Length: 194
Image (tube, rainbow, N blue to C red; front, side):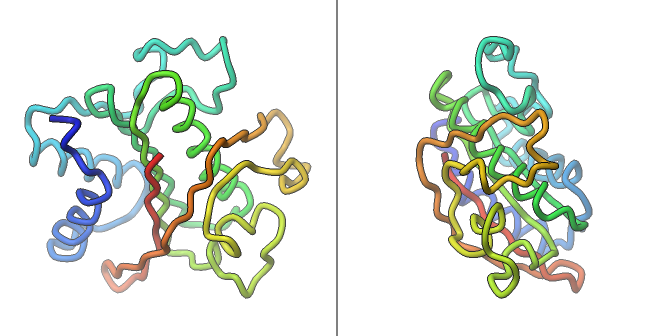
């Protein structure tokens, strides 16, 4: 059943049915993970959905390689990984870096375990994407170029780079910025398939 899942389509249906029509409130990342997982489980009762699953469970030893994270936000049948970022407050450079980090992590899962990956970024803060603001350095990925690719070391601020590993992304992932309104709050989001 997992192979037939189109996560981009299912996420759009989830937003339309549950968030817009049924008024499920978007409040934080954990709540969104749970609501999306519940939606998928109710629609596809035979799939196994795991939250915050350690990568050791899928046979990856974090100490043997370059891994930026140790857990997958949502893991479906150990074949589909979903990473979600849902910033509701500033920290724009750090959260942008973390969104790019998710893509790098998903690329590694695909390469090593053939796991299909999806990166979802949703926020009420348009400044993450506002090209009229500073659009160089780490900001260029979401604001200027609307795509995620290998991060140049000079794009990462010194205070962010302490202890962080290089984001060596192999491919380039353009995205379309979408909008939705929930409880009179406008949200901006993208979803990328890895």
